[in-house]
Image (tube, rainbow, N blue to C red; front, top):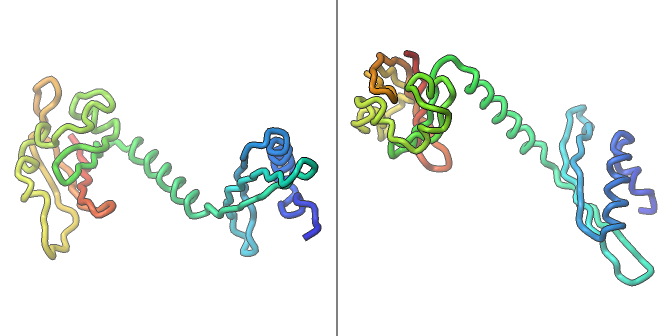
Amino acid sequence: EGRPVLEVFPPHLHPVARATLHRVLASGQVDGFSAEIEGLDGQQRHFDIRVSPFKPDESTSWLTLVATEITEQVRAERAIATQARMIESMLEGVAVINERGMIEITNPAFDRMFGYRRGELIGREMATLAGWPFEQPERWQRTGDDDVQSQPVEFDGRRADGSHFAAAGVLSRFEVIGRNHSLVVLQD
């Protein structure tokens, strides 16, 4: 109490904090900024700082600052972005198939392998591209106490132009928010 608000932040954040505080005072609108601050353990911590105006009377203006730690969210977002870049750069075709056998995600190699433009396969049934085993869900969606999470697959793939190719790879099961999905990684 009684200390200048900028002293709460490390010196490298003073310019952005000062600019945000001035904008809120001038506009009367909520604003904010993100802050990366080194914790006592030496690890970088991430915060979302929201600044809100409060004017109890004509002669007084106050600001309320609320800091929310978002370190885990930032780490998760970075991990997802890294995983997405990895999948996008893979030479193998990669797709996520939902429990109804519909394609939810593909990488560029998967699209090229089947002869489709980027995004055209989203929402399409995998069985239209592969037939067996995908037209028989019990063959690739094991249920019960089965510990096998991955299985090899080989099938006759069908390209957009009607031509066929021999595909081989691995089909792995996983769960996202209570829904079963399968990840298929293929080579032509």
